[in-house]
Image (cartoon, rainbow, N blue to C red):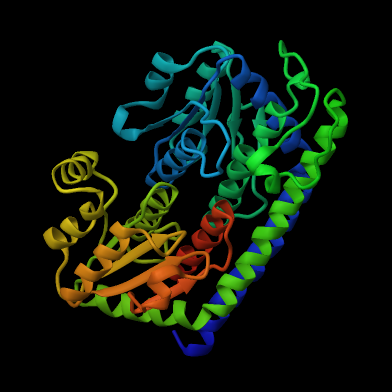
Length: 399
């Protein structure tokens, strides 16, 4: 691929994402606002979010949405119960049959690409009384189908969608009078998370007014990530191209890519590895890749016996060889276990690539990786969404 073609890949990728992002959220903002209300009602009655998916890429979204709801990154927001069911647990319908309860929310990833397994699980959940969601026609009550055939762009739009659902479902908890069986509070208070909801006012009993405010917030968040993708893919275009060149040379020589991250970034590492191992485009070559977040026995053994800072570096010691590559994903750029792994990788003469948020943190300021891609935001969900665009484009450049 010539330099001009590589630049063209990045520019076209950004154009495709900008167009699809605008069209998708313009069309779906109203429905998403109403879905947030329905989800809040379910959670208020004791329901849980049950996410499931069979393919490796669907598994990463299943894990990602679960961790976002259970472990909120916004101070002052409640933890909401969520479970992720993936292929390692067996057939999805069998797992859903054992877990689903009438007030739960069932969300299927990868429907339409798993031989009908997710659709069967959705049908069972719907019969059980669950509220159901999917991102392809699969018999769910709430279908949201991204307006593009590109698997990477579809995944990015879906990630923004479930981040928005997680952020804005809390609005309706702050308007208790709008939840079935809940009494209204005398005053609205978004507390420490007020910056998430810039359009909200004191109205407690006007559902349509709150839905309109939430709809506006959905559109604002979609616009925010659109702008952040522009920053990420334009400011870092040369860095992504150089990183892809280094990766391709390593792969051609038999190297392996190791990937890691914490929390939502761990699921992004899962997704990146899934795309390298099992290309979403049949024209691309499968590549050797290893997910260092994948094995809970290894992670918990190291954390218990040594400490959490060593959970990745010990695995780099075990698996990393000269010429291999490490992809480190961090929203802060300051995570101790990520920095330790990058140091270990460099000591073994591995190639290192880091995707970081905020101002890049220590990883950027101290140049702790060979290639550093900075997504300049302090809003973690938007950082993760733009970082997904970065590693998807990196994969396409390697091909």
